[in-house]
Amino acid sequence: MRCLIVLNFGRNMGFVVDTERMRIFLLTILVVLCNCSVSNPWAYNAPPGTGMSGREALDKPVVLLAQFTAGTGVDARWSDIAPEMQQAFARALLKTGKFDVVTDQYIVNQALDAIADTGATRDRALDTVRSTLNTNTAFLVQARITDFLHTSEAPDSVRRLSWFSEANDAVVAMDMTATDLQVGRVAFSDQIAATVGAGDEETDQYGSLEFGSYLFWSTPLGRASTDVLDEGVHQLAGLRGSTPGVVKITAYEVGHRDVKLSGDGYLDDGGIYYVGAADAVTGQYISIDDDLGRPLRLRVEKHFFGSSTGWLLSEPAEYEHITGATLSKAPLPTQATVQ
Image (cartoon, rainbow, N blue to C red; front, side):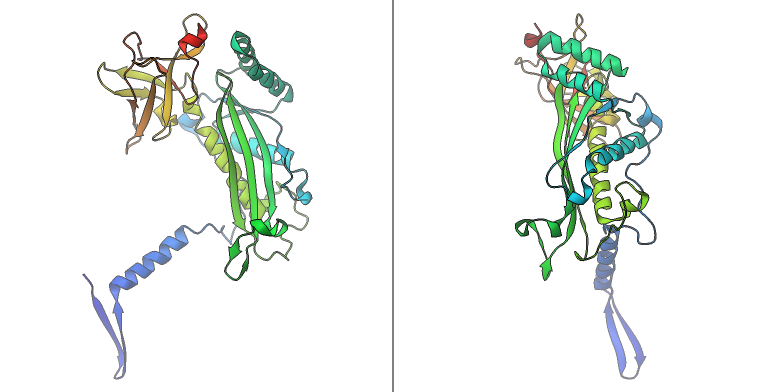
């Protein structure tokens, strides 16, 4: 219902305020301000990464960080960006409290050799790598900086328009791959990118600043780098629950599709996971069969107050016992493959 308010400031002065339109206008302004991506103009930006505590800091997996590399899309001014970006990423990972980070290139080479092996040889080599890292859960992370520049330096064909001219944006992009060192399979692979408006292309916004210096994070490339690094950390954090042995099925009733899960706080809402169990002889995680002989999978449903339910996407085979089984984001070896 609309309400009209008449304001009268004199005999011939007055105007009508439509309160419904005024409310919509004020709400629109509030939404715009709340979603504004511009950094606080009264403070400097902090380095990427945020801290965690409590349960998030327990049972930390190891991130084995390979040397970052850089592509041709990096401005020549930032030719040393790869090792600097790696250091910033390692620091952001540590600040979360969710990971231990190892940057030993000798162990990285061991992991790469193990992944390239096949069969039982690969399993033993991966066990050796995890033993060296003193962990049951580890990921080899490789990254390549593909873009690190202002679009004013890019070809005209890729520059976007902005009102009456071409925009000048700071663009940072990173190809990142995470390989699960329990099963030797890729658990995550994507290109993570961020764009921040850089204003006048004729203005030098960096001066003598170096990448990683405190004031650098307040520059356009600094803000874009922060977004990319934080998103990379977020993606890796989502892999914790997808690692075999971290989340387990604690209750299942035959004939039902819903199961109870422990450690469900590490899982993604709507995520699809493979169900597996450790082989009694080898200790290797293998998939559990459904009633058609396929790998059994489930979908996670998050509830409002933080709990979760796992919904089986098919019936488990009659000979399988899934209470105590674990989840994996990557496909697990089948029983036929292991045999």
